[in-house]
Image 1: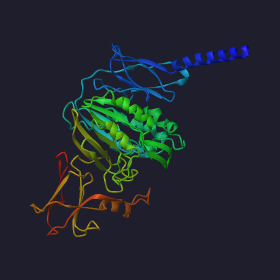
Image 2: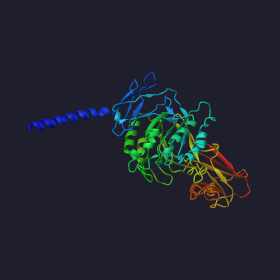
Image 3: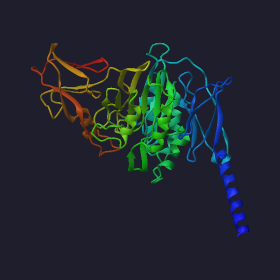
Length: 472
């Protein structure tokens, strides 16, 4: 009995020694500095634990067993580190290497209290051939975005998911396309960025995205804004996923926000919107709303390929962007007639002061398409306008030969240009079964004189006024 007791005690001692040493294998220590001195107060995380650097820029984290990266929240007082304009703010954790040293070098810079955010949704190329369109159209245009901007305008980019369309082999070319622009562009994971061969394992299915872009949720600061990127695609398979945020992300976000002053504007990027225009919604959105309730905040999302806006409450809005690829890069529009494009958000201090959807290859003033009498089947005796960015807060006005005739009437129907493109004799051969979709952003006016000059104006909720008329 004595020998047996001694044997058990010895085993227990060895187990405790091994257990005591195990956390050291997960120890991550490092520094954040400018190459000369450390930078204090920088937020550091492994996606589970959040801490900050000390007065000398040093940090230590006992990382979680499932942690894949250690990453920093780039402070507003530093330039965003990037390679080829893809931000690099993380280090991959190598579990086999034991304790890890992770050092981050940042370049101090003045705080950009005014900047322009370029947000892209669903570029979604599915081949190298199609990727060339994204590079030659969207990226080439963004390479010149600063040409007409006031001097010293600062730009930041955010691509909110479905970077590619189940085609991880073209990620290298996708990354290369971003070399054309001259500002950093953060990335968000979408459902088509997961490995469709990995079933019922969301944790592993993100590996292609992680190879090129790092963690699937993280934060960074610009000016008086705190940006949060979330992964709200819980992936089980190509057609089997849930739009929701995992408990691990919520636990991380709660810690992350503990370091964010409530005077900051929050900008949350995720692939699927929290609320869909058709009434659907992200499963556990109320928990997210509760975490953000002390802040002025807005979401930027994609996924639906529909341009929409939802005011959740007075301090929280959801901007759902139209798709950069329109409808599978078949032409220059989505199936509802909204042009290929991207969002432009102008921020001053902690306020969003302007926003518009920019149609690719068109001027910023191109915000509607006007059709003559007889073009729309639903209202054959009326002129019809598709004002794709319209939402509550916009106003319309119509003039017949210069005489004010009040507002246009809104209805749901088919954009005549989309009908012609998808159903006409020159419909896309690549996807001949593609069909137009209805939109509720159509407006009509029946003129007294069908030959009259019709002018319409649309004024958005930021005071931007757009005009179109039926003169050739």
